[in-house]
Amino acid sequence: MLEIDLNSDLGESYLPVVIGDDAEMLALVSSASLACGAHGGDPVTMAAACRSAVAHGVVIGAHPSYDDREGFGRRDVDVDAATLSAQLHEQIERLDAAAAAAGTEVLYLKPHGALYNRIVHDEEQAGVVARVAAERGLPVLGLGASAIERAASRAGVEFVVEAFADRAYRADGSLVPRAQAGAVLHDIALVAERAVRLAVDGTVAANDGSTLAVRPRSLCVHGDTPGAVEMARAVRVALAEAGVTVRAFR
Image (cartoon, rainbow, N blue to C red; front, side, top):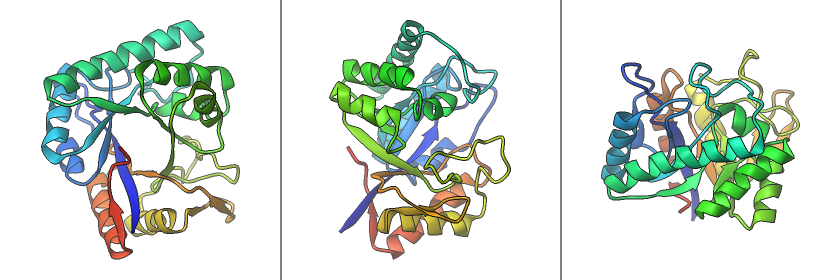
């Protein structure tokens, strides 16, 4: 039987700004990567997302970022290793508290935005993330064949290869930067088709037409994309029709 985890980056609202529809998305995913108060999230939002995740039987992961709310964590930030480590620990501790109050716990770490993309190639910052994960006993979600995968291996941290159903890939396996046209996919049928191909065949088409071997254990559909709920629902239907069971990797 084929299985795949379906995760989404949620809890990114910071009241009164509401981003995405956490309640609807949490009814569709198996894992929720929740913002920890830096790029998004606040105590009220984190608490509500944790309670909703528990109600839906969804696993919670920490989704920390550079401390850059103005840029929604999607701007590259030069920060030294000690500062980055402290910021990540502080963010995870915020979510830990919200999860504990909801009767659950944080079970994985998935960096957000610019930090996620930087640790694909930046060995130093990947090492920081891996050490934080090791110190907190958390597996890491990220792109395969990357600096963070290597750093996780060195740190003795479980690494979970993630793939994106709704993002375009370059031929080297990295994501097309959001500043470029076509980086985020909005065609629901196409996204559902890519999700099935990733889950069943372990491959995805790059933007130059080549085929990448990915072999993910987790698929992501972003929660802040317009139409995210309909997209996630279509992905669930397509996976079920292909005989793929959606189940959290933890």
